[in-house]
Length: 266
Image (tube, rainbow, N blue to C red):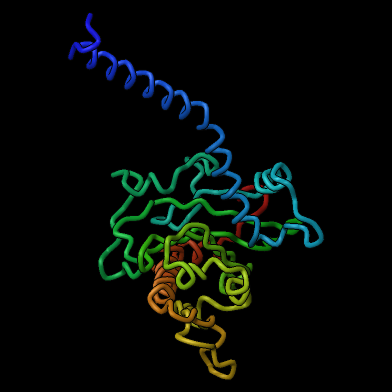
């Protein structure tokens, strides 16, 4: 076959495409376990950062971090019923994928969709942190639309289910140097001790437009705003108020106060 043959040229292109495709597929298969492990490590690092369990005098390596993470009491919550649901494995349930599933996801009513979610999973995977047999903290996933991206995070509450123990945003694509400051440890540290609900159980938390006036009656519910990131700050306020409202964790909290969990799975 002549080197100038159009058929030979097509065959060369076809063979090259098949070889490249095979190499890419093989790379995906080989790297997939690594990617999953990195995702698990990143997830565990963000969750563990607000559990209060990490040692203050040292930084655990990856294996130690994963071991601590897997020691947490992970449970699945049916948000519709406001109760724990042991029919789904919290270690394998994919909350993001469930959003689009007709059976596992639900539409968010427009009048309640302050976080601009559209849909959410019927179930949430939460983590209980124990101090002996006493509940020390509860860690909950939250998400909501920011200015440019979906914001994903975890929030930890004290046993009173009102006081914030910690906050971590682990995925966002907000404006560099402005909105992305929601991931800055210094700002997130100011969340600790703030309250989500007022005395009658109404969500009151918000990101202020500037510095919080320590003498204001609203100070217990506010954190300082981020300069130049008002829209992102408002989005954070909206997502917290959604998740702690009637279509989020509020029914679960109401039930939890009536039926406190126990370490043995109750």
